[in-house]
Structure formats: structure tokens, C-alpha cells
Length: 86
Image 1 (cartoon, rainbow, N blue to C red):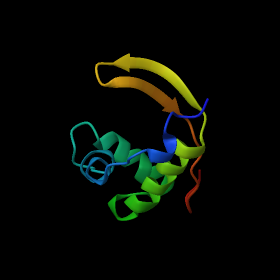
Image 2: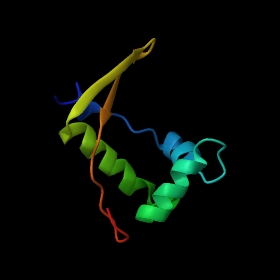
Image 3: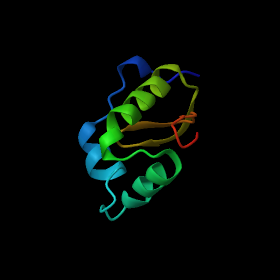
């Protein structure tokens, strides 16, 4: 199934920069390490990651995983390519 309203998905710049791609964040640093090591993506290439996430939200196949007080939780698996790999 497609993500409901996937064409309107918002990828928050602050979450990308302060958490996902922040090598100093207590929890996010693990994501930052993997993105840098596997794909060469860091804070400077955040716009590329943002565009890939938005494309996945629009076009990818979503699986309903759970619910929370904030709504439904979906998972989308996608392939992202970079100069270092995919």
C-alpha cells in the first residue's frame, strides 16, 4: 500500500540536522555514523537525504507497523544510492 498522504510528507530539517545526521547526539549519532560510513551522507548532504525520504514517502510501499497516541506508524524500505554505494 502507499503511504496515506505520502505526497504531503514533511521531513523536518531540524530533525535531520540535530538528530539523524548529528554525530554528537546521544541517540542519533548511531544513525549519523551509518549514513556517513555507508553512503557518505552527513549534515552537508542533508538536502539529498531529505529528497530521498520525500520520494520514498510518495512512491514507496508502506507497511502499517503500529499505532501510537500520535497516530499510525508506517515503515517504508527504500534503496538510496550515493557515490559510496547503496
